[in-house]
Image (tube, rainbow, N blue to C red; front, side, top):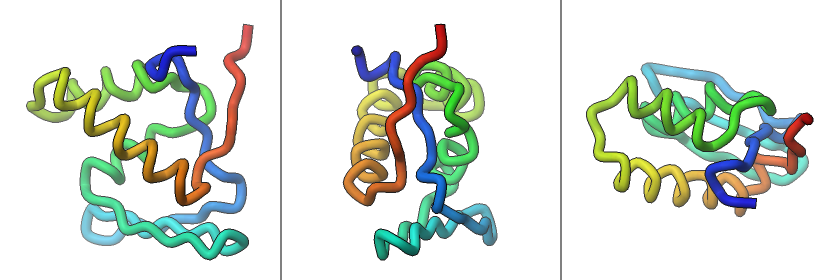
Length: 95
């Protein structure tokens, strides 16, 4: 599966709170804590277990003035950091 086709789903135990445009995400069972930037917070808010990475990138591209190649690289890096922190869980695309 291509990265863009991946459906992102938050870890069911992840909780977050947004303060001044930045989110604090906590997964207590994993002892994982992340402070997200404004754009990271927007991406996190779009992760719902239904949207693909491509759909999330389209929404971010509509919200921010950023070149597509840079956006793709940034999203891939950001999702990788969420994966490493075990803040995302696998989600299969529905038929």
